[in-house]
View 1 (cartoon, helix red, strand yellow):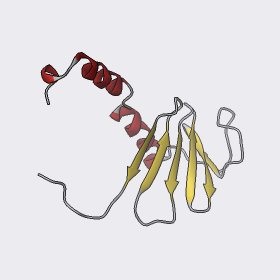
View 2: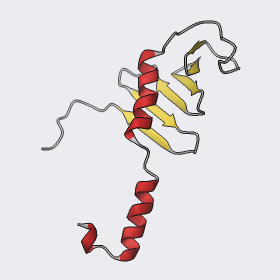
View 3: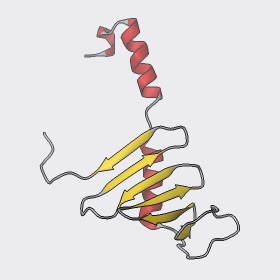
Length: 112
């Protein structure tokens, strides 16, 4: 369906839905920090998050919990990364409450 074929109410709902969409850039920033853990350290620096964390890195800190690791970022985002499953699972909650789940599934090909 093209937007020309939509009612005004449908267009407004679509615009609202798209405004609530989390950008790929925001997700990539979190995933990039998780992948790199820049300057990982066992002792916090003065500007690092305060709390009961197992390690810190530039941009956040991590608490290792049975079954997953919880990352808290300086911007208020939180990511939970599964650690017991061989398949990737990352649940990201942004400071405004919106969430993104990056979940690895089996190895079936995408439709073409």
